[in-house]
Image (tube, rainbow, N blue to C red; front, top):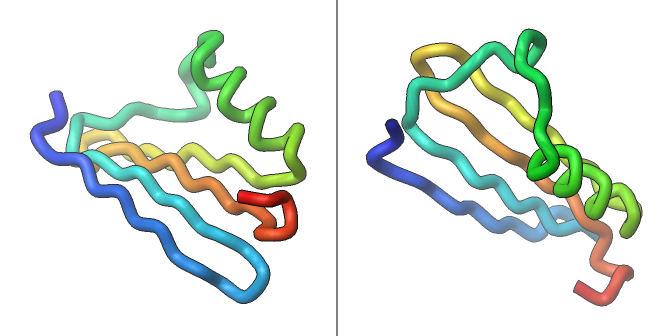
Length: 74
């Protein structure tokens, strides 16, 4: 139910931060069963020594935050 998506990319020291945020209805992260999409995103980021975070609050939207090392050739 999102009507807006914002993508923010920042250089932070030796890392790149990518945040993808929507203004949808959100959900309770603790109570959902993560499907293949979320699990695969997290695994792929971890495979390249990055950090994957999923943040969502019911009624306030969802954000995916990726923190990647620049030295990984990205």
